[in-house]
Image 1 (cartoon, rainbow, N blue to C red):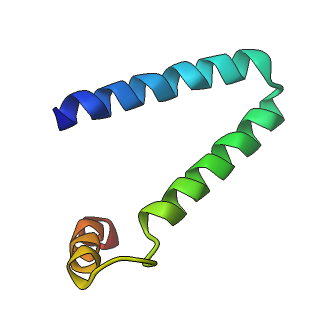
Image 2 (image 1 turned 90 degrees about the vertical axis):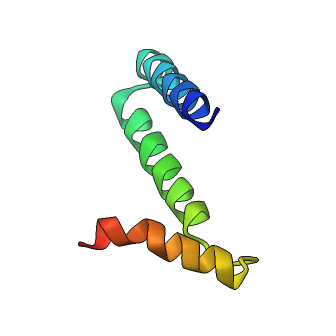
Length: 67
């Protein structure tokens, strides 16, 4: 089920990118993508309201990217 959700999310992102590229100027699209990615990164890695177990899990998920 998680795999289907990830695939659906990626397909939706691709479709949104196609729509935005066709309707917005390139500069607007770039700013939108940057803001979206920064916002997603901030919410994924925020520590507000996390329990110690959730923080430990988050750290272990980030370890492959640190190396």
